Image 1 (cartoon, rainbow, N blue to C red):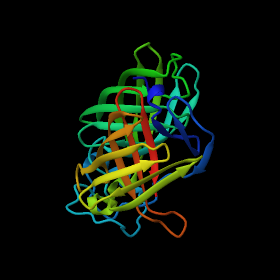
Image 2: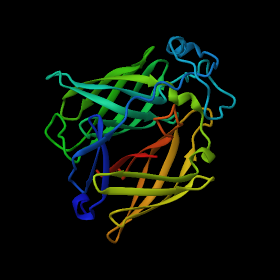
Image 3: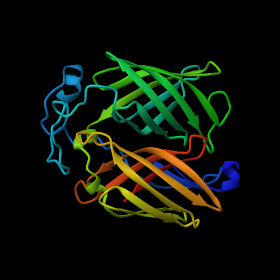
Image 4: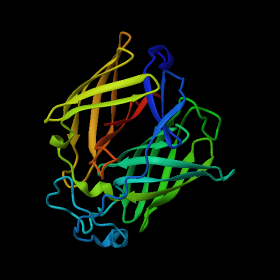
Length: 291
């Protein structure tokens, strides 16, 4: 059945706002949030490959337990991390901000851009060189070849700020990728941090999720769709979680997989929240900010 036919809820981060749509449509923007790079480095040991990243890292009190760190100033040795940055179409030089990207240690990655496009990544690393493949999906904006579904290859190098490289689409178009490492990745992970009731609401769409201490969760949304799945630990030293769930909606059951990160409360205006990026590997995706 097509994405449109399933009327799956799509929560896509677009612009400095969050947009909500169902199936192939998208709604007007509402809400906003910024970078998460202010959580600091927590004084961990510097890995040789990324020592330069740690040099300018801010230091704040940790809001999450971190055990047996594998890095100094919390910068992992590798391409894994939480990032923000830009994706620039090389022929037109049109810049598309990347609002959040999560790459796990196993090379699995998810990325969401300002124009609502979404990328599923699979990368590997040799020394400071990163190579891999990607699939891109969109419910509104079109990719450089004019389509709403693309695939291609990725090449990049690990730099002091993060990653610098190129996406090459199968049709031949290229886009320059620049990602800045976000020190929220150093917070560590624990399933108990996710436990509780979380919600998201925008433009008439709402989602409420209840997460147990073991990472299992259930959720319902305003489209009468239900979610059942779990979060999992990838490495307790870093802030990235695997996620998988079954979305039951309008008589269909669809499997989603993805990645998530937890961001603790900062100050009096930024509540704790969970960023979720997941897709069905067939064009439907969900990018949500649970608070």
